[in-house]
Amino acid sequence: MNLYESLAVKIEERIRGGSLAIGERLPSIRNLGRQENASPATVVGAYELLKSRGLIEARERSGFYVASFAAPALSEAKAAPGFVRPASLDPEDLILSLRQAMHNPHIFPFGTAAPMPDFFPIKALNRCFSQVLRDEPATVSEYRFPPGAESLRQQLRKRFSGMGVRLAANDIVTTSGAIDAIGLALSAVARPGDVVAVETPTYFGILQLVRALGYKILEIPLDTELGLTPQRFQQALQKSAGKIKALITVANFCNPLGSLMSDANKRQLVQLAEDSGTTIIEDDIYGDLAFDGTRPKPLKAFDSQDTVILCGSFAKTISPALRVGFACSRKFAPAILAQRAARVSGVSALAEEALALYLDSGHYERHLRKIRSAYHTLTAQYTHAILSHFPAGTRVSRPQGGFVLWVELPGKPDARLLQTKALEKNISVAPGPLFSSNHGEYGSFIRINCAIPWTTQAQKAVEKLGGVIARL
Ligand SMILES: Cc1ncc(COP(=O)(O)O)c(C=O)c1O
Image (cartoon, rainbow, N blue to C red; front, top):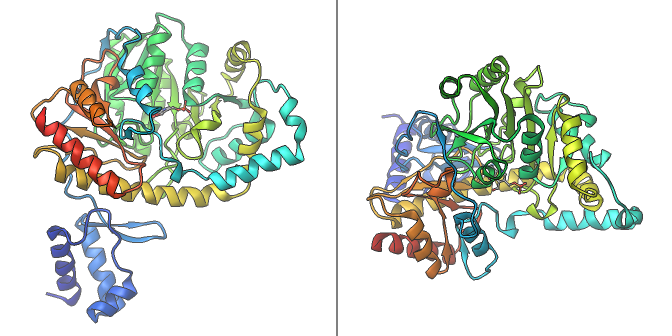
């Protein structure tokens, strides 16, 4: 055995024995060389070998970390697309009760998909808001109407151009967040009763929106690692006799799976949509949160015929309280603008100008590097804790970005009952049935928020939740 191979074996034993935990940073090449009396080349060889075996992973400008290799893969979802009868929108709706729990500061927030304040650039935002108020005081007395602040739309144009998306500032309409953008886009392309395809499992806010707007809902099951595949979209087209008016997709790190569509699949999906006359409404809200630091392209980068309306917001990266998002498409901008102008008596000039200043400051990329790495480590730490404290047989998603985990519980417990029992212990979880329109699927799944600092309190919350599950 070579020197680097025996060093790799030694490190592997520490990983498997648990003295190096999932998500933990490995010593730098120089430090490990010093500790082990080995040359840098030997350490690099050992790390490369462990990397090729999937035991450790390299992170952008940050070094090597123990990979979440131990997480068993989720079982495969049902594969066939199908129409669903949506659950009614009554006040007892599961979504409302989950959201009410978000407002209680005594409840440990595993159930939300919102990072804790620790992960937002509060100081920099403070500076930007102060600067707008100081330099442009007239902003506070202003009604500003859609399409929104020119400064912000220019910043967005510049950002998207770096991702291969060609847009003019006039192709962009600012919105009150991503869900507002998707709602406007839907109203611009489809009428109530039209077929709208959605992914499953997917974020319940999207499902709530399509339910409320009265579309015929066709759910397309996601592949747990690849996301929406062109094959499944093709099956969905057949199922609907080619009549899908709009497809809503979160191609980059969807909520709750964290899967990522490949560039080849993105290209093929856009082509299929173009050929079938389907408009894709893309929600790119998690695109900036790739664990490996490589910003994946939006579907819109593969779109030459304006088949895609690119939507999103900065709710997951800068602050949900800004309530600023965007919808982008040359062809549909006038219709979206008309919808928006009819619904609001102005956009938040203050928030939009401050956000434009922040994006212009260059701080955003630094901030993203920090939170991407934090979310990568945290998802690995929570995965490890869940697998240690939840009943044997628990399976966990392997997200490639974002900050949530999709957890499959063994023995088919009722996730809704779990939600109630966990709330009695002051812990919220998002029960799986929320992630399908009829609330009839994913009965033994829960979604866990990992954008919560890894503290003793967090560890205790995982243990306590594991106890609640075991008792169900
Ligand atoms: C996929 C997805 N889209 C949209 C949203 C909400 O975005 P916004 O607050 O900008 O409306 C969320 C929040 O959880 C989400 O997960």
